[in-house]
Image 1 (cartoon, rainbow, N blue to C red):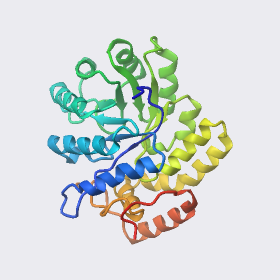
Image 2: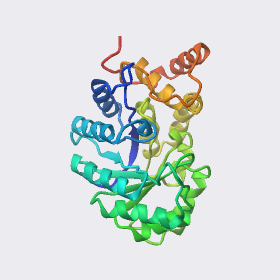
Image 3: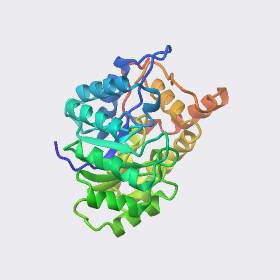
Length: 307
């Protein structure tokens, strides 16, 4: 499969039964739904996938299921975040064996490392794979990296070809990365993150794609494809219609992603393993009713569990 990644690469949720066990049938449903709704690639198990609440065995299990269910239809990026270089390398090697088209990782999410430690961590991941590596630069976990440091990773470490940029100054960092990278042929692209909230700004700066959650891939794909056709005004009109949902996602990210997927019939249950926010209440659910009703004409695919 072509190794140049471009477009909407949705991050898959991991569906759970109400007892917290993994719902494999719903996970396979999420994969098919994402593809049918127009996603250009899928990513798992990342933050949206609740990787932090999964054992390593479960991370490999869901990765295997996703690779099987995708079956080469679109690229699969598997996420090998580790608490150490050793742990990340073990996951990377295992994920290579599952058929990953790319590997994504952020710096160890438990204890921040100094810059040389981060370099050695990504160097070890790059040496453990033959597929492209995406370096994730998130806000709240891992160790934040400067544009200059990320350019060093691109210039010096084999197989690092992409950045997923979602720091607090993400749009300016995107431009800075393009400006200062020396080996331009080695940087295949920069993905936007943060649930796609800054997508129009990011596309204007030349990102190769975006990595939102998988609850509304049809709308994200419509925005991306419309912009790619040169219809920027129409792309912005679609993006503006999506903003109320993106705003609400910032309050209840994991809960809202799964609740939207449950309502769309993609998963059986909106159960999450670890609540780190106040659960949505009755008024939140009413607000979500209104928001989804306003974009129902953009929602083109229903899931297998839809009543």
